[in-house]
Length: 167
Image 1 (cartoon, rainbow, N blue to C red):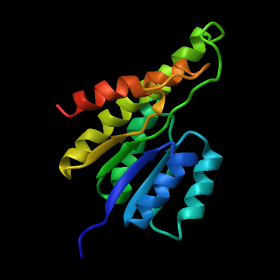
Image 2 (tube, one colour; image 1 turned 60 degrees about the vertical axis):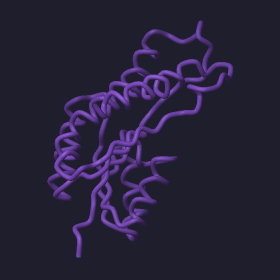
Image 3 (tube, one colour; image 1 turned 180 degrees about the horizontal axis):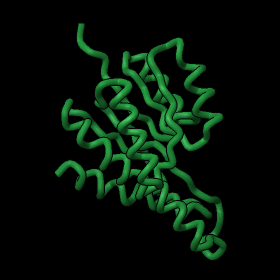
Image 4 (cartoon, helix red, strand yellow; image 1 turned 30 degrees about the horizontal axis):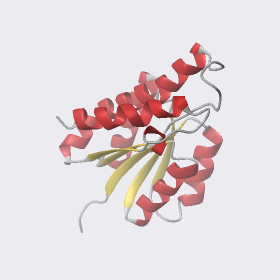
């Protein structure tokens, strides 16, 4: 029997990330939930553990040390990493004039730097098994809605950077 593949899902403890984690388990992947919210991460791992092998690693995707630890822990526990789903992201509903520089920097740090760090640290493990990186983003890059301009940072940049990562 072929060895089970392993995936990391950032922001995997809730929302779309939780649904992705569940679907991967249903498709016989081992899953690491990389989640900043420890309660959501533990709860989701416990809830989905009947489906397949799942671990939770508390991870701030904007922090290089926690990302490095998470990727190494995943590889150690599962013996491989075949897929990285960069799902974690944040935004604030506010007008551009009300958005503070600190809030903007936090959005950039999680949505863009987090994607870069997770991809960077997972890449050596992914290369060993011809793995893939899937970047999840909002459709807001292609449409306009009041008070969501900062939501466009991740999808707009990822459209360009995802192609660059493949080179």
